[in-house]
Image (cartoon, rainbow, N blue to C red; front, side, top):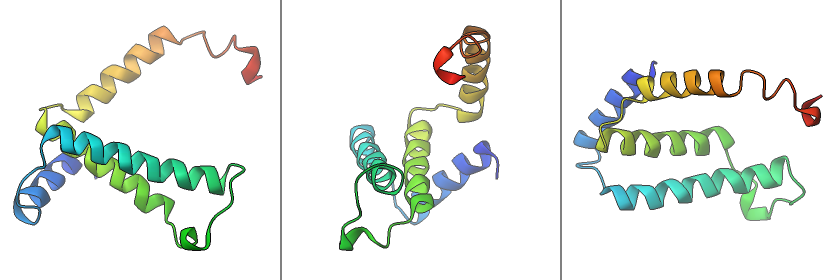
Length: 108
């Protein structure tokens, strides 16, 4: 699935199953909540924190998909073409960081 196809699929789901988009502020809050859930898993799975018994059945991929879903909702609502935005962002990073990381002693 391309990013453009994902944006269309989310829009279709929202307008049929979801009835309508939550407003942009609500979706921003939901996005922060979902990112927090990913952070919680990362801190326990790859960091020093331990899982609680109630955390044992977490699914990192599913939580990342939740983040992506809400981000796509916000993009659709604000008329952002994520394919175009990502392409432009990668170009910007390629120019700005062409030598930056190669010269970073911390990465060697």
